[in-house]
Image (cartoon, rainbow, N blue to C red; front, top):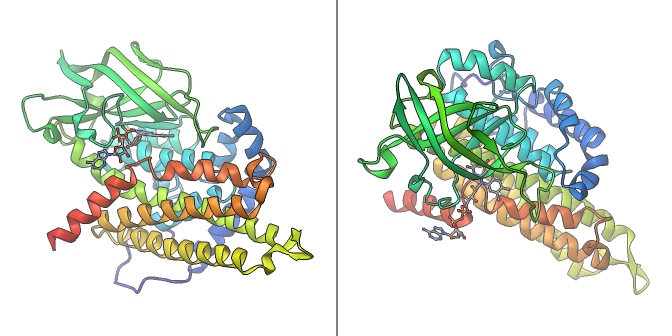
Length: 393
Ligand SMILES: Cc1cc2nc3c(=O)[nH]c(=O)nc-3n(C[C@H](O)[C@H](O)[C@H](O)COP(=O)(O)OP(=O)(O)OC[C@H]3O[C@@H](n4cnc5c(N)ncnc54)[C@H](O)[C@@H]3O)c2cc1C
């Protein structure tokens, strides 16, 4: 079911993709090989967000994956979203992160909780690539403990006045709008006093800093945001007052599936390169792939990545059926991201000294994969989510 509509009757989880998802996978793979792979190393070296790719992503439907067609999107389901992110990540973690966060966080929040006028204004602009979306929860003083955020939104006439700072925001400086979480009530439990707003770039008082220099995902845009007496109309509020944190947790549940998919793509990309290298590189008179030590590394990575794929697919399947998927998404993200880091590290080892230099892509995959253990909730936070569900049974 590529269409975003819920299946009418239960079906067994597919271990093989149906025809539509298979076609989608092949077309995104072809696109990534033609448009992203040849440039990814250079973009990473330049630490530059490739704005020139945005119209191409849009024309492939990759900027409105889950946005319904009536708002100019592709109207696909969560499994399709995961496939798109995975296929891009096979060649480039940075662009996979861009596509994952734009679709899952910024536009995902408006799609799930925005008003009809907000959807009509922002979703077509997002799907067409005219405006990339950012989503700002993290602050300099709060990440894992996201409900402790300090940014405030106070009533100001018939609107709101926003003040505060946000940290590590993907598309923070290249985005056209940002969904931002702020505290609207300091007198209630910290999770209950948070509300979301959509703020456009160019709004007086809203500024984005120069992008941050990072270990990996270097050509994705990561910025700090500042809000100084930013006035927004009440029509820019997304969802109900005080419900922003609960809405955010639901957004992260689906977002985590895409970070699991990103990890999967990076891991498979590294495994593919390590396998090719193991067949070609010779030592002691034979291809290194003939040594059992190398074979076992490839075998472990393949096994862990295939297990990750099933966890990602299960979480997407549950999300598409409208069933609770918080625990499944956390398990998919946790397992896939740690498996991907191991697979990329293995690929560097198989390449020996050539794995340590930039000409071969595996060191970039390793740097990019590490982000998957941190973004949208660290591995420790995923374990807390999973344990909460285990103990609740
Ligand atoms: C490249 C990049 C892109 C990002 N994009 C976005 C974005 O678009 N929007 C956004 O809002 N945020 C974004 N983030 C922020 C990201 O979600 C946070 O960095 C992440 O949630 C961790 O928060 P923190 O950095 O404050 O670490 P902290 O919360 O300070 O954690 C530090 C360490 O303590 C551990 N820890 C914390 N609490 C516990 C606990 N209770 N038990 C055990 N261990 C604990 C953590 O697991 C971690 O190991 C991005 C980050 C990066 C690096």
